[in-house]
Length: 215
Image 1 (cartoon, helix red, strand yellow):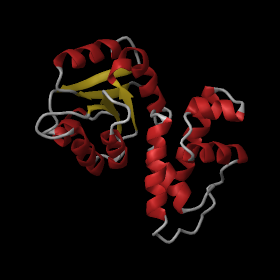
Image 2: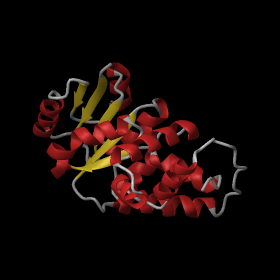
Image 3: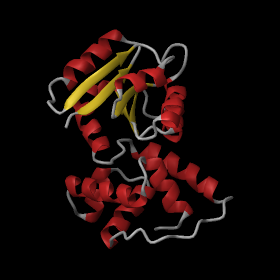
């Protein structure tokens, strides 16, 4: 079954380049390409994507605002942000709005396909620095909220180790190095963690792990 992908970017050349790149992957199907996000909810309703590639800087309404609108109506859609600067606070705002990860535009040719596949397997492609910002945000919120009672999610000992690494802002590669396991094994564990915790993004994982004191 193909993975349906929609592209939102005001730069026509970038949209076309992304479309050509994704066309090389037989399991990907580009179902929409849009130059603005003013009608993003209607566009998503029409083309029914599994994954949305969203530029942060969009005319009329920002990509961050679009993420909030899309996730409100279609929480199951995975959104990968595209940006020029890694340390931009807007990336962090996008993640908090519901995006599952982000990719620097100058790495589109080399990392886009892998990043989409990472989303497909339950991952959240982002740098440790942004993951750390998410963690700090969640910790500050949880400090003023009464922790929830911890249910039994039936996580294995290894899954708890991987979850602890995610909470501490480690990337998949860093987790693999720390636990002496392969990247694919890390990705497999993360997918199972997402399924057992009933979450769809790294932000939700960190929030639930901290608030429910799972690790």
